[in-house]
Length: 458
Ligand code: PFF
Ligand code: NA
Image 1: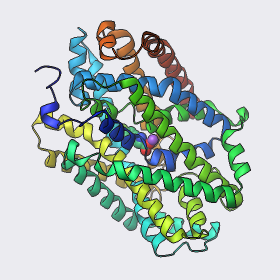
Image 2: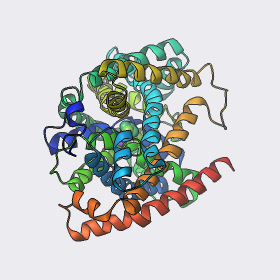
Image 3: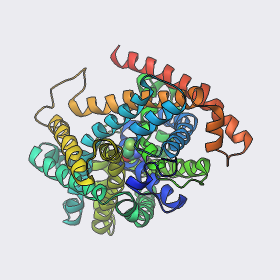
């Protein structure tokens, strides 16, 4: 099969570069931006963490995203088979195609807890609409959230709904199933974040929220925090697990990868910063909410904002609809690489592949559900189950896959092949990118990974 037809016939392809941008943005913008970024920034003391995170996006994340899109487009198959093909093409033997495996496994592991958190957002749609949070204080909002966490049945119900929604779209296939909702709903999410931001400026402690996020407080930063920032840069851009590679496989031959990646990276960062700027002023205006409150941060602070704003009933439930949609368009990209692999190699059809993989992720997700209640005290390497899955994926698997991808593209692929895939970039841009991918990214990831893991357990 020629490069153009490999994989294409099986999975379809994007109509245009624009569709790819929408799909990649749909994958990138999700719970990572709105839920996770604010709470880990809060846990790590803000300012310096945010700066490190932004540097990781710029110097490691976006260059590796270029590499992943390129590998996907050249490989034209699911990440596992694409890596197998590219390894052979580069005249190599050995375990390089394990990159694909590592990524695909990480994707399913992330999906397992992602569905649980997205379930919280689903639950909040109804709570918002029914006025549960009308006029609520921070204490009351905290209690309502606590009651949800204490109820495994409720959590499992919403986790299941979200998982069904996810596989329903992926069963529909890449071209029809994905991308359609994203085009309408992502701009709406952006607008609603602006509304929230307006509320925070008027009614929150905006000055303190702003300075928490942007003033450089080096003393709050640890190596474990730097590793978390790096891991989150991968997580938020959907890197290191084949999602972007799989989407790259459906990309038209002549599309400028560099600009496309820039667009996705900028949008993703904007959404994260807007979410942070919307959430922290509310946190600081309410002493009952700690910046380091953890995973519940947005589920306590934002309901307080909506509950005390005109039109909050409507805006509040709409906001959680949009968070759900953002999570949804990310979740489909978590499962698609594995689905594509089962279809290509094991002759599964889309339906059974989705049922099998969705089922596995659902079962593993039960561990995260229980870690918020029944298994709260159970520890794995010092983490509860949810924290363990999060650490293992974001802080270990994604950075390692990213490292291997940088090494593969920078050192093992033939330079002329790489250049040809990126022929639309100027010489200066290409050289700068190649230098970063050969030296800077691997070095940074290695140092941060080793020190971060050491300090996390030391
Ligand atoms: N980028 C998504 C987010 O920020 O919520 C999460 C994610 C999606 C991570 C897809 C990895 C992935 F492959
Ligand atoms: Na993101």
